Length: 150
Image (spheres, one colour):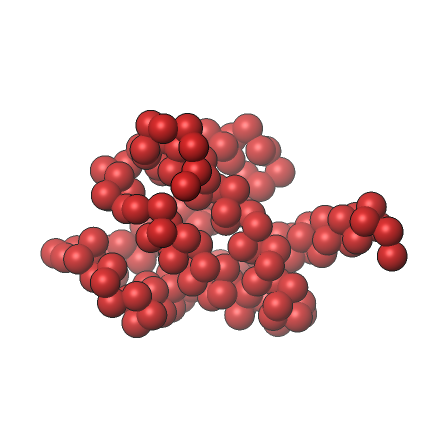
């Protein structure tokens, strides 16, 4: 298989993945958000300090809304980039390190991949990870003001 056909296959898989994720209901996105935070804080207890005192159910609802927005913007890379910049400028995100951004991204890719029943887990996780890495890189550049991803 050539690199071009491999890239083309990956893009086709990504498009299929996103098309199947867009119709996730608000309730499904809320479940994803709740599982995400449970797994994040279970795997990385050092992050708990970023969530105290925080109303976790309210945070999960807000995250579910953000997830819905990001999914709806995927075809519009400029608007997706603008939204990533807005998220990076938010005060809670400004306290995170580059390593913590990566922790968030890895756990979220894992959780999202688990909700893709019709795509092998490893493929789904890799696709989500690539997209999330692009988003967190923009968030980091805005957050740090540095312009370089660590």
